[in-house]
Amino acid sequence: MIRSAEVVNEEIRALLQNNGRPLPEDVDRYHRLVVEYAEALQAEREQAA
Image (cartoon, rainbow, N blue to C red; front, side):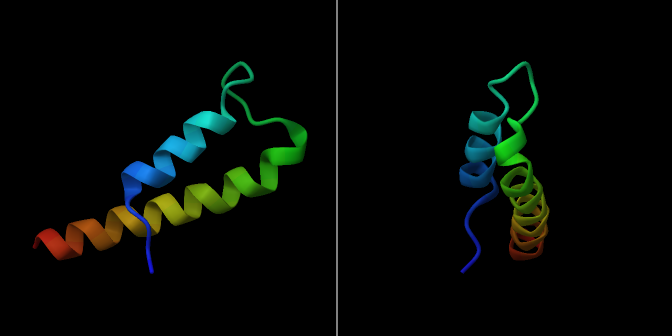
């Protein structure tokens, strides 16, 4: 199941509390979330069409 872009975006923003960059230990998670965010946006656009 794809989570909403809004939910994923909240997680991304939480990781960017360190001067707008993820901590070194969070970089992999950040990249996975960015991909998930893009997928969620695409799914939401397709659903709206």
